[in-house]
Image (cartoon, rainbow, N blue to C red):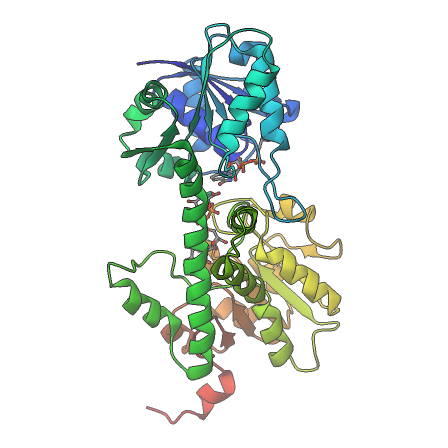
Length: 448
Ligand SMILES: NC(=O)C1=CN([C@@H]2O[C@H](COP(=O)(O)OP(=O)(O)OC[C@H]3O[C@@H](n4cnc5c(N)ncnc54)[C@H](O)[C@@H]3O)[C@@H](O)[C@H]2O)C=CC1
Ligand SMILES: O=C(O)[C@H]1O[C@H](OP(=O)(O)OP(=O)(O)OC[C@H]2O[C@@H](n3ccc(=O)[nH]c3=O)[C@H](O)[C@@H]2O)[C@H](O)[C@@H](O)[C@@H]1O
């Protein structure tokens, strides 16, 4: 069943959704208010770095199933389904800002075909928003047009967004009517991903609860890591041993310098607000957020302890800037907090990331120097901090730290190297929730 679909917003979610829906055969019109993005896309250039995405854009543009436009009339004309995938950024109080969603509702009212459409919200929105969207559209309509709304939250991860779309654990569909749910289920059928149907409010909550639970798992393992660090236990083995229990599961138990990105920080705060709106203090989630804020500072705390004479005037190499590997997304990356703190302490930062440098320049202090490669970033550095676990850092021979740095002190915020490997290198090594490995101690060890 091939349908005409309009996707509004070409950020991560809109673009990946639009491209994937065209790839399974639908006629898709992706609309954005940003003409630069649409220009680039019409030249086959993806405005975001996402493995595999550009190839799919080319394939489906060539097959004449995928179109990019700023023209509402072109996108909305005869659309069976209209997907809303615009941003829902956080307001100063942590709640979700729905201004972009409300604007799209007005645009739909002004442009939807007389035969009506099913309006699908992909954006992460507070419980009750889909019903508000329907109200906003019908309120602005000057004609009698049938509008149905469906909550269809998105669960893709940046860096593996294309893979996730085809191999998701579930597609959640929250609808008012069986007919609307049937249409969205049929549209998604070729993905072969299990569908879970529910009411609209539950679908909206599933998205926030899922992100909050994953964030809680990360903060939990990070707290255990901090205790392990003090007691001489190894968080990697602890997480492995815990994860073997199927009720716990082995995913999302990597201790590190906390979660970043465009969603966990924003969605956890929004859920605290959503709970507050119904007079519930979400104590657990507030702690998850506080733990994460502390976690992002850990490398600076360690650096202050281990670099002799303090950090003022010292060269700090930052390896990795993106909030996770395989993306150029810098939103809420721990590198932002770290660079600010280090700069306040008078350190000179030399930073390198395989692809996020252009985005980093907009968010990090102006004084940060950007190196062309790892070796240049490490040259004569007093301390190195690994912020993002890119493969090229994980594969780096530890001798590079020895050779390039003034003092080979490495603070690994992502536990990139097995301790047994670090033991063989002539570096001081501090990681998260694992014992430190110090040169002096190694040389004092009796010969075997
Ligand atoms: N980034 C991610 O990995 C995921 C994001 N989400 C959710 O999806 C939503 C979108 O997130 P991103 O894709 O990261 O957003 P984004 O902020 O990167 O992109 C949003 C796009 O919408 C466009 N836009 C804004 N107003 C518009 C309008 N009136 N008409 C047309 N286009 C308009 C903007 O120009 C921008 O290109 C958010 O609610 C987010 O929480 C959900 C799952 C994953
Ligand atoms: O709503 C969203 O936007 C998305 O948010 C996350 O996806 P994403 O932020 O792209 O990336 P994740 O792989 O979840 O990583 C988020 C952060 O947690 C950190 N993390 C992840 C896993 C882990 O074990 N430890 C850990 O510190 C990562 O380094 C990263 O900073 C969710 O995984 C997606 O399901 C969801 O759709």
